[in-house]
Structure formats: structure tokens, C-alpha cells
Length: 258
Image (tube, rainbow, N blue to C red; front, top):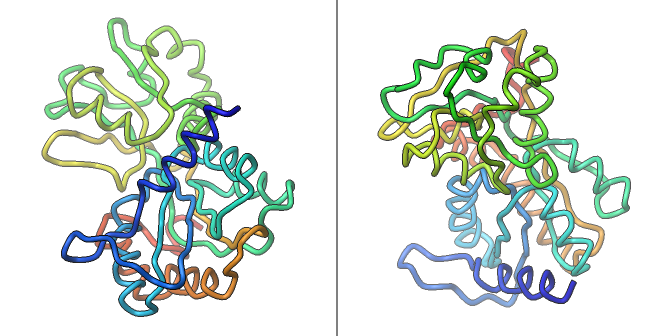
């Protein structure tokens, strides 16, 4: 437990809000945001814009959604929770750490392969082909891991694919790294993390897929609820959502995912 606390505290200290010139800005007000690892790029940009507007420094702890919830429980500190799916927000709500949520963007699962798709993956069923190596998220750590298992179960493919799973990762970013480095043949990740320079993606048909929505909310342990509310309002504003769209996200609401 002590080691976990040290790791959590170190992550908090390391994830400062960096200004445009690369230096950490000082501010009388600060916010600590626990955020799913798959939102790092747009959220880093949002922090820069928000700090310039409000002079409130934003510090992130990025990680798997369930891992972040464990850190909140362990440390009893923080201002905002933004997991990769509403499931984890509901779990935090049941434990009394959050109450009202606002919905931000969609997380759309896709199959990702290395550039050129050397294993010829065209469908979920192909993940069970002989000789195909598959990497998935850890269902006990991150949203994409739990969701991947549910997608396989929904399509009656669990028993077919399980023998080909060569690893489980704590964050969705690690899946993308392994795929980009051609360490595996395929994995299930979020659409918005697609990198066309090193990856190919195979879309999962709507009737086979399970699309999730990313929520955000203020933590009950926050010592700066007014600042936290300002940050949440900015993230869910049109300006904030435009940042997400530039990074490949589909913002909530959208008719095609209703």
C-alpha cells in the first residue's frame, strides 16, 4: 500500500500543466484531474488554453480508469475525475466520490493493426485466426480492457480469441505502442488514437460494437470546487469540444451514436 501511495504521489507531482514555452506555470489556484490515458493529447491542450483564460494551473494524473479510481480512494485528494467510460464514473458515484456528471465525447472501439495489416485482419472473428497475436487492455485496469471483453462476449468470440491473446495492458496507450512497433498483429483500441503513420484500423460494425461515452465530474474531496466547475464547463463548452474534434474525437451528442 505504501508503494502504491508513493507511485500515485509521484505521478501527481510529475504531471504538471506546461505552458506554451515549455515551462510549468505557477498559480495561486490549482486543480488535480484524474483522466483516462486515452484523452492525453486533447486534455493537455485544454489545460494550456484553460490556464491562460483562468490563471488556474491544471495537473493531470493519467492512467487506466479503474487504476485512477483506486488512487482517488487511496489518497483522498483531487478535484476532477474523467474516466474512459461511464461505468467507472458510476462506480465512483456509488462510493460517494462524485455526483453529477457531464458527458463529453464518444469512445468508439476499433481493431488496430500495424501499418499494412500484415495478418490480413478484416473482422473481429479474424482475431481468432491461427497464428494471430492479439493484445487487449486489462479489464481490471482500463475501460478499453473491460469493453473489449464485452465485445467478444457479445459476438460469441471469447473462446475463439482468448488463445491468441499474448498480453493485457494497464492503459490503452500501451496497446497502441505495441501495435505501432509491430509487436503484435492486432488489438482493440479507441478510434481517436489511430495513427495513420504506423497503424491501420478496421471498423467494427455498429451491431457488433459497444460505443461508450466519456464523462467528467467534480470529486467530493475537491478543495477547489469553484475552479473545478469552471474547468468542467470549459471542457464541455463548444471551444473545449472543438479541441477534441481536432484530435479525432466525436463529441457528445451525435445522432450516429444515439
